[in-house]
Image 1 (spheres, helix red, strand yellow):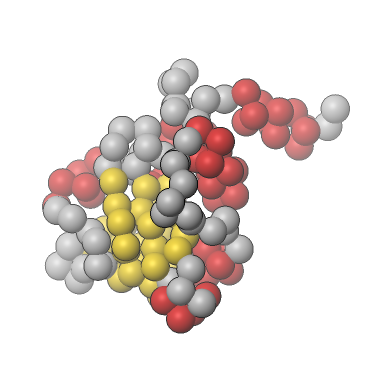
Image 2: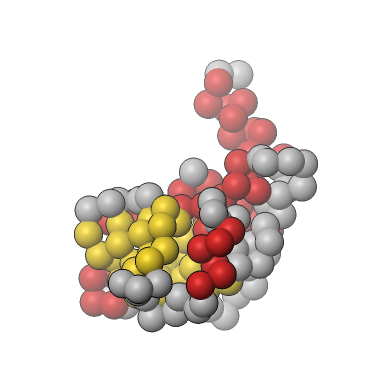
Length: 133
C-alpha cells in the first residue's frame, strides 16, 4: 500500500463528526477562529475565493464539528450551490460583508453539488471534506 492509499484509508475510518482530537475532519468542520462567527449572521455576504468572487452565502452554521457555509454561485455555475466546510474559511469581514475562503474558483466549481433536500449525514460530510482537504 502506498502513502496515498494509507492516507485515504485513514480518512475512511475517521469519524466526520471529529471525535479524536484535531483530526483533518474535525479541523475541516470548525472555523479557524471561533470569533469569526461571533459577529453575526453571514447570510448574504459575498464569498471571495483566492482568485475572485464565487457567489453569496445562502446558508451558514457555526455548529461545533459541523460548521459550514452554503454558497449560492448564481449564474457563474448555473445557479448551483456548494457546501464549504468552515475550515476553508480564511477570513470574515463583517464591515465589508465578505467571507474569504482558501480555495480557488476552480476548486469551488469542481466541488460536489449541494442538495438542500438531503441530510448532511456523515457520508455526505466526508465527501465534502475529502474534496476540499
